[in-house]
Length: 420
Image (cartoon, rainbow, N blue to C red; front, top):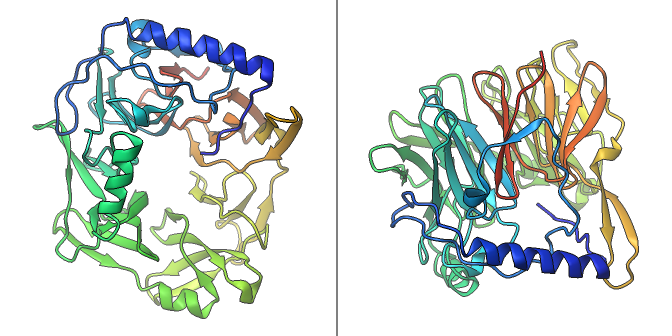
């Protein structure tokens, strides 16, 4: 996620001094212990250098969101925001985080994976072992309750990460993993044909039959792979020839519709003026249906999300009503100003405003929509057509079985209880 540089000269000095004092205090606190992925327990987190991308202004935290971690614990898990959250049936909240300070230069560098029990409050942290591969980028709780991960993070210092990336540049890597409670670690999955291997993976979904759908990048190709957890067999959709015939290339986002049809976005070539397309794959005919995209050419490829009413959202900009018409039409939403980001030029100290598309969208059981964006965490009330900036950090959210909303930012886990 692109973070704005919010420093002015005066605020920068204040922010640096404050952060240095905080990090110095953190080094005196006891560490959190718990199993790592493939290695020993976490010890005290070493102070990390100041990161100039960290805002000096206080973070906006609403009063009705309750912090769950004591300061002595939260200060030892230095992360900036959560990129993926899920709640499992055993009342555990799993969080994949991204660093606000530069964790890549600390002994426990890289992303964090955190397990927080919603009943007991027990916290376990998993980090990437130095010199090894790492924690998943995104999590999925399957229909049978199993926990899956997609993607991985490199570990260690910047130099070690560079060497790892060079070493693995020409080698296939496992990208799909499943959590094994017996060993308390994510176990890599290898299918017979190596289709769940590649350079990176961005998305994972499960259909009604229990199969997993993955978006994997391998070399110069974006592959949509279907994986059967029972048979350990994987198949790849033959999309590239059809995309080429439509003057399209690449797949940026995928999503499964309520009827298990597959939808995705693709970028046009010069032949069609770089236009973005939203496409549906018909499993019966193996053909692609073109639904266009309302913002046309030179647009950032939007994330896709199906809400409970069957509407297809392209994050916050537009939605496609597939239930009301045999010929669906795009509906536009007024671009809300809550997604405006105020940049400050560190040299000229001039403000620059830019509207940035949200990264993730989630609909809670009370009908509210939650958007994770550079501007922060945003809530949208569909019935009132109102947007609310909940917090100034764009973290992902999750919902437990009681309807409570959970998120995590700035070393802390928060719970929100919607009012009846």
